[in-house]
Length: 376
Image (cartoon, rainbow, N blue to C red; front, side):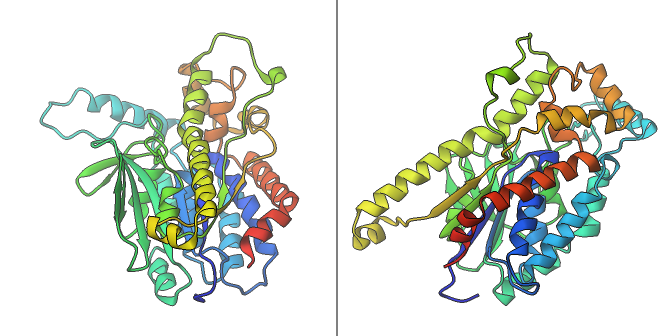
């Protein structure tokens, strides 16, 4: 990596199936670079499904278009059966196993609870991501840092597991720590373990779940790994317009969707405001003062979907396997009541391709802003 090249971070937020949108944005950006070109990003930070995208791209930091092409190929061919056990026999067997766990003797170790079995996702990650390539990218200088954030269920801390340049130091702040680790499948499963839906993942002697739960500062890993510019690909679609609001008593689907939005969205806006205030302070001070205080100006571009995902999730809800729809209906969840929760769980090709297309169009609509951030 050139010493004069700015360190640009790509921050990918969580959102389950919604993360297909990020693939569309990145596909557009990749077309703006030559076929054989290193990635414009040297720092990758991901949470939940965004962590899977981040690690996959980081392993191909030496050839950006190839990395994006492989990621796009995966998402365009993804379906529910490759993420969770969705056959009736497998789904019922998993639920019976979970129920039986609750009646075991207290001295018998119990498996983490999860309504759905994500074992197919484990197999998919092992097949598609070569974690050994991360070390090569670091040694070659194409990658400066990579972080995957998960939530520690024992301590209540947000833990950012990172691989990066030797000089990057672990950090410890209020309820958030950075821990140097060799990123593996377990870290991705932990970061993407949506509470109640997927079981927690064990790393060492502790259990971890979705990284967005306790993440009070989503931009901190990028800042701690020396980012000078940050591109954020957010998956929240903003506040609904009055005509989109249903004036009905909230059911489990609406409550679940509201909880998911709160988990994945609330802290990012506050962290952005905090960073903007620090930028104003750094701009007002002299270079000597900013150096003494450890401040630096960080350019940020925050990109979020231009269209809501709920109408599309409602339209493609019937594509979800019937066994999974039946389970959700048994719990009082259906797309007709509120499709927000479904928009996170709908890993079906037609829906995912729609999200990719939206991301692709949004990137082209913001081309000048994106290129301004990525180029010197």
